[in-house]
Amino acid sequence: MNSLVRSITLKESLTSTVISASHVRGHYEFRALQRHELVPSSCLQHKICKRHNKLLEVFCVDDKSCVCIRCMSDRHCGHKTTSAAEAWKEQKTLLSVMQRKSQQQIKVQELELLSLSKAVKHFSTSAQAMLNLNDKIRNTIVEACEKMFSKVNELVRRRESMVLIRATVLQEHTGNELAALKIRDAELCELGQTEDYIYFLQKFQALSTSGSDILGFVKEQPSFDLLSIESTLSELKKSLEELFQKNIDMFSYQTDVSKLKFHIVSAHDDLEISHDGQKVEDYDWHVPFRSGNPEQFTYWKQVLCVEEVKSRSYWEAPWSGTGVHFAVSYNSIVRKDGGNKSRFGYNKLSWSLACFNHECYFIHNGVKTNILTPKCSRIEVYVDVKARSLSFCCISDSEAMTLLHKECTVFSEPLYAGFTLVSRSSVTLCS
Image (cartoon, rainbow, N blue to C red; front, top):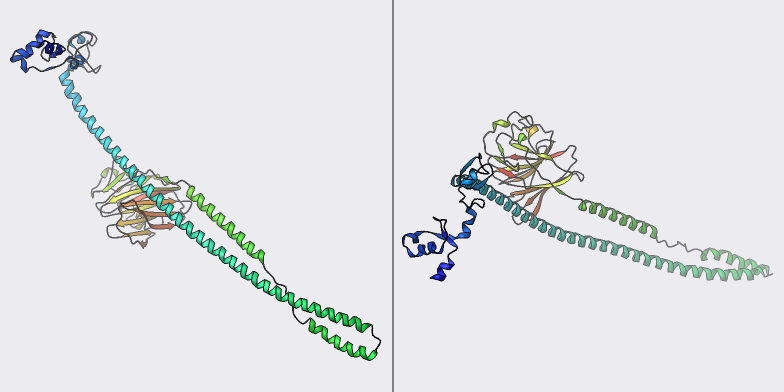
């Protein structure tokens, strides 16, 4: 019993502040005191005022600290105070608010982390697909070049063989002619030395006619135009180097991920923009405080983004609902007209990809191009102003990318991302 008492002498009752071995022993010997809860004294030390050794029972609102009764008449005289229990209730309410905010922040960060993970996976998949495509195209180009150079070698060898045969024939005929000419020349020398008139006249007639027969074979020098082939190969080499360098420069140029937000003042009254400007939904009800703004679309359920699209950039946006138009447009597009002048894709100032549950098409200036593709709930838009290209891609659930449409055109004004929403649809901009 003595060892037990010694082990709990550092404990005290929540109903008493006096610590002694006899007091503690009483909590074990008397039935009435056994109902008291004993806790280690270390758990109560933070509840005692270090200055006055009194129980902290009051909360000073001004200094935001717990004080004892004597502190109220000492350092905290005249301060606004309340009981610790009341302050606890108030602070616990604030704690609940802080917890909700903390949980919301955690959720946002988890979604951001998930989005980053998907982006990394998508990039890795796309990069590997691009590497595979690069290897395939490289092999195709190398094979084509090898076939071409092999053909050139074959043509050169064939031409060489023809020229050599021709040269051999010419050499043979020329040698025969030379031998015949030497014989005739010897006969002419011999004839020039004779004094016999009759013999001379008879022999001379025969020799004068034989010269034309000897030179009767027409000689044509064999030709082999190597300079033209060399020039052609040099031009080909130069063209390939320029083409490769041009494409390498294009590939190495950094594509910027556009960080876009919806321009709330441009949104139609039926469209609701989230507080962070990243999501737009069509709820089929009016938001009257936006009405009357000169930048607002008043007929079509459309919205533009605040940021101007950079020279070379892309953005991604998942959608849901009935249908959505993904567009790029000049800021000068009409806003108040009920016709095609203010409708994305139906005029010269905008280009649009329309995605519905049952169809997909590209439209510009009212000209529609149907696209055969399965339903796609995530769209990526690529813009390269310098290269005069606009591309729309579909991102599948497996992160595979499919090119839906590519448009080549000249952009004469700054571009802005825009969206048209069909009834009960929504779009979210990926950050």
